[in-house]
Amino acid sequence: MTMRSEAPLSLPAQPERRRHRVYLTRNTEYHFRDGFCVAVRDRRSGTFLPGHLALRRRIQGSLRFHTNGAIVPNPGEPEAGEALCFSQGERDLVTSPLESVERPPRELVEAYPTLPPGRPKRKR
Image (cartoon, rainbow, N blue to C red):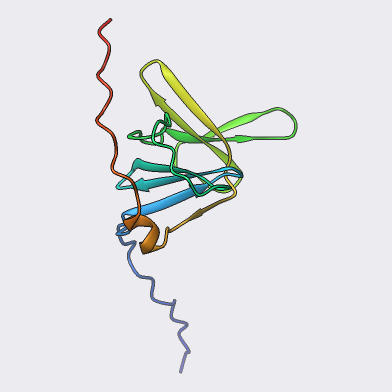
């Protein structure tokens, strides 16, 4: 009689169902819903920043800065130690390195301010 070793069952990868995510830098929280930045908050004061350039933008990727001066792009999900990179039109934005990526508490999501009307796009 031979013993057969069975591999553990692995579940198929499920799509991410969570709609909200918050990226924390040393001074700022970037709050996202369905991939778009919906709120930016100062960590020290807890005040939302209604005029921040990140609002209404998607993350284009992230950048990891190494001690030897190298900068390595990451087109996937940003991780702690990487800087968020937003690129839209003429204005790019790179944050300071992330300290963590978390799910915001429901109470905070419910406190998000209403976004001001979108800025009109300039004609070239």
